[in-house]
Image (cartoon, rainbow, N blue to C red; front, side, top):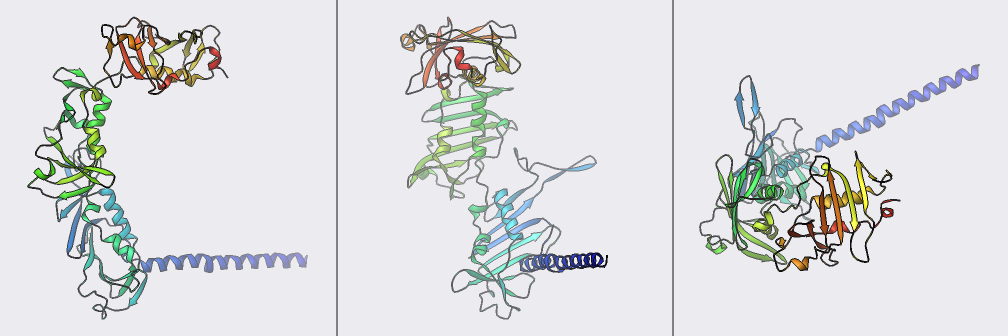
Length: 478
């Protein structure tokens, strides 16, 4: 019994010792480490927002402000979108050396870097040596202002260490000289291009009501009527998806270099006789004009000079941006061949018709999300094959060439009078069945001709989905 009591007391003592070690050594060590890390921060931690930043570097200066527009409505204040098409509750504006929109993500990341900036060491506990370290007349500096605090915060940078890995500096409000990594200074001395918003346009695709384009490939005009786009003046239906992508392309595009902030003579850039001119009319009554001039090569890359109506800046854009805008009526026309929807189809039959390669007629019905053989009721195992063919035909668009009519001399070349494949669609909406005939798929181009049975028009379209067209039901079973 005495031995047991001794063992219990020993266990309690060991537990107490272990707890004391954890509390004073492990936990205390972590706490001391946090305090040391906090001491090395260049700037005091704060929850206040940075409202203004000023960068001075070798005589060049950049000033930017965080703007939160507000408007008052009954009984509450709500934040207003800063620009048409902008979903953000604030933005950064560069006010010097030019007045332009800032890149919110780049500047927010810059602010986060400032908040976490650390010194290497304190090299002098006073400022009496600031002249020796180039800090009496610093060539580079950073200033920032916090919400509700008129006092500036920041750092001045002086000379570099002999090995170039460190820079000496003094933090505003602290009576000491410190060293910081050279890369930290380089990160703080950002250029105007680094921090400016390089987006080509700020409107949203849904704000556009008219588009006109003139290029070396031709001209077209688009007008939106409610939810449908039309090519004018013939009022030919355009592809809503393609127009939306076209209208929004400048919102996602960006320039890669600023050539002139405020150009006067633009002839040398080919902008008096532009190779591309696109105009967007917005529903608020404003217009946006985008002009593209001469091309310029940099190594293997090709760029174009461009300008816009919102400022007088001349900049360079990638060739891909220009290629996406310099399209034709054909490119943007509605070219879908059939107008049914996937969920309308309740039954489908597939047949290979090619001489010597024919197959059985495979009749299928759909129940909820499963396909079954019509005659046996057995479930189709490889239903993804059926879905691929159904969706491929439903989404088929004629490509590259205009549709061919039976009166055209090219009709016989389509081979559509002797088709290789047949698909028959039945619908639950009461509309009559649709029979589609398809030619063989060209092995090189992967293209084919497609037509409605008895139709007078053949369409040239992609046959990517035909590679798994079944010849018999075994190909749809495991």
